[in-house]
Image (cartoon, rainbow, N blue to C red; front, side, top):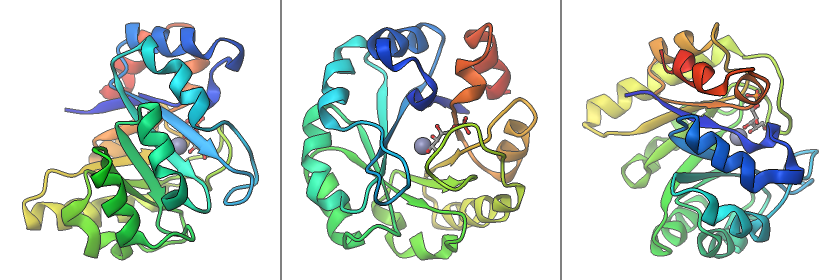
Length: 214
Ligand code: DX5
Ligand code: ZN
């Protein structure tokens, strides 16, 4: 089953609660929430207080993608705000193992994210504790960028490794997902697709979500 995670980065921030409720009605599986600190990436979005405010607008899974330098320090804030999955970057300054343990101890699912230049093999030693691995298909920081097709090698290698170990791992791709690129990502082994501009700029977001799901 393919899951679609609309990214609120592309929504109208003046009515974020309504936008999240709208995505729920349109058939989103997860709500993808991009947190940027202006330090790990050259852009700033919002933090835990904003997530807390939109939490009661939907019961869908809040899939938080932390593009911040110190996820260990802030994990508890995001858990308390209502995150279900906390994805952080392996390239962050926080110790990976300890951050995963912290997220799990807070009752959330843990996800590990790799930027385009990071080999996917770096996540292998943590796979048994992860619910999700997020493979970036653009440089993190901004919506509306072009899909990096060469990341598909990482997706298929990771899917093969997860299958070899008998793990039911969510493999998420993020960046440049469209009706053209979604089938490419699915064929490589991804089962969770983030879509920002594709869904939010669609005239009919429900139809777009169905199209992306394939
Ligand atoms: C980029 C974010 C993405 C972004 C994707 O750093 O992590 O989630 O919203 O946007 P699109 O789908 O427009 O490429
Ligand atoms: Zn994201």
